[in-house]
Structure formats: C-alpha cells, structure tokens
Amino acid sequence: MDEPVIKAVERKKELFEVVVFLLLIVPSMIIPFLALGQAKIGFPILAMSIIARDIALTCLVVFFLWRDGEPLARLGWKLSGLKQEAALGAALFFPILYGEFLILKVFEWFGFSSDMSRIPRFLTARGPAEIFLAFILVAVVAVAEETIFRGYLILRFNSLVGSIAAAVLISSALFSLGHGYEGAAGVGAVGVLGIIFALLYVWRKSLVAPVVLHFLIDFFPLVLLPLLGK
Image 1 (cartoon, helix red, strand yellow):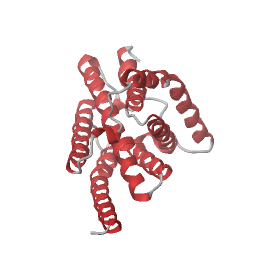
Image 2 (tube, helix red, strand yellow):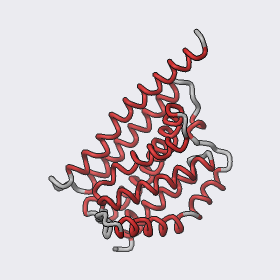
Image 3 (cartoon, rainbow, N blue to C red):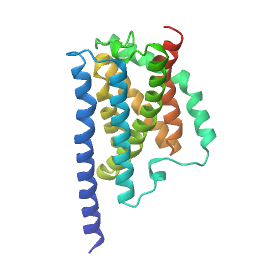
C-alpha cells in the first residue's frame, strides 16, 4: 500500500477515534452541570461521579495509546526532569491565579455574566470526610484533565488539522465546556486558563508542570479554604 494511502487511513482512524471520544466526554461534562439547576446534588455524589468519569476517560485514552503502540511519553508523561517540572508548576501558581482573576474581570467589564464570586454550594466540601474527598477529587481531576485535554486531544487534533495552534484552541474550548455554572465570564476565563496550560505543555513537552499548576489552582478553593473554615 502506498505511503499516502496509509497516511489517509491513519488519519481516518484517528478522526473516528476522536469523534467517539468527544461523544463520550462532551455530554458527560455538560449534562451534570445543567442538571444542577434542576436538582439538589450533594458534594459527595458529585465528587464521586466526576472521579469515576475522569478515571474511566483516562483509562480509555491509555487504551487508545496501547492499541496504537504509542508510549505515554507521547502525551508528555516523562520521568526525566520530574522535580524541575513540578517546581515550575508550583512557581507559576500565584502569577497564574492572579492572572485568571484579572482575565475574569476583563470579561465582566465587557458585560459577560459571572458566578465566580463564591464557590458553588454543590462544590463546597463540609467536614473532614468531604474535605478528604475534595483532595482526592482535585488530584484525580488535575491528572485526568491534563492527560485528556493537553496530552491526548492536542496530540490528536494536531495530527488531524496539522496545526498546533488550532489544536491548542480547540482543546481549550472543550476544556471550558464543563464550567458553564460559572457564567459566561467564568467559561471565558477557564478557556484562557486552558490555553495557558496548553502553552506550558507545548513549551515543556511535559504534563508535569501543567498537572501541578492545575492541582494547586483547584486545591486553593476546594480544599484549603474549607480547611480554613472559609
């Protein structure tokens, strides 16, 4: 079989794989938060459902890589320079957190709605058991979402459209979909945050710094503030 034909077959396989994956992930991100306005869902149920979903989707990504004979290193999971990458992610925490606040204010200034002035009740942990569950949630979400949105989707979209810039924008837009409860300004700010994570990933060719940064940004409101009684 000619090389162009082989490449065309590979692209069709990758396209089918991505479409199937998006059909699984997009509704699972949007529907639960649309339903929150119609029903009272406690933090433990929501946290456990997100943990289960993210673990399942990450396992699916790992299966795709295994099936295609691709190492995890292709997504940016590398052991080399682990401490340096983790330190970089930690060092960027406060500048990025402040930057996200400024970006949110810019969206609000342009008239976009926002509901980020306080942590939503359904995302508020109460008591030691729920705070511990929140810690597990934050850890799983940081690893899973960076593996999915920065590693897997950027890899596949870059292969499909032939543009790393387009891959970054598409993956960041998808990343923002699960934050509809934060209002239009919140969704926009999360989308920009996704682009920052993606640029860090493309620069470092590693998921470690984005995972650490993602973990700390979620840890601050979901774990640290409840521990302090805020």
